[in-house]
Length: 238
View 1 (cartoon, rainbow, N blue to C red):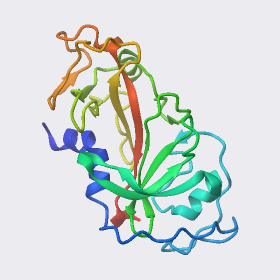
View 2 (view 1 turned 120 degrees about the horizontal axis):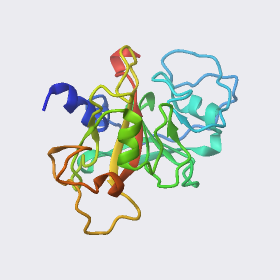
View 3 (view 1 turned 30 degrees about the horizontal axis):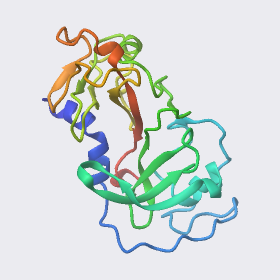
View 4 (view 1 turned 120 degrees about the vertical axis):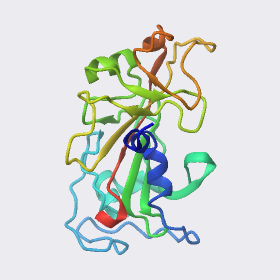
């Protein structure tokens, strides 16, 4: 597999492991600051942000945001610090849960600096009924066949049933492929469709598979988007 494909396929793992600093002991959560103040844990001051009411990624999210900016965007009551966000291969990270009490809006937010919760690294959505969607049209529950149609070309992904199972690894230069000069990556991960039989014949294991693989003629209907994420530039780019 080429380095480009591997980087795309493992964007989630790289964002959580390659850019994190070692977390210190959990810190007390500060009281929400007024919207006109700046966060004390941000490296530089920035203007207050207007609240948002849509659920599009990346939207107003940017790599230099911290917890206080998230509170401005989504409301203090909807931003909860979590010391044990799940990561790849059983790791856990300090981060933020958005709208933790509402499965239709819940999201996990990871940071470049997990101690100070500074510098957005990746935002992950994996609730089946989530209202979040990507700004390129991807949303939860899209069947693989529809994904390929939107892309305009076959796409490649890892087989299911392992840590990185279902991650789209290559859009083959289609409409959903990363655009030149755009530092934000838009990622999708496939899983079994809700109406798929338990023993459905779909690609499994750590190999790469194509959406037009003739060995799996039903996979277009059996697989669907089960996770969306956006990943931001690394700490050196902040």
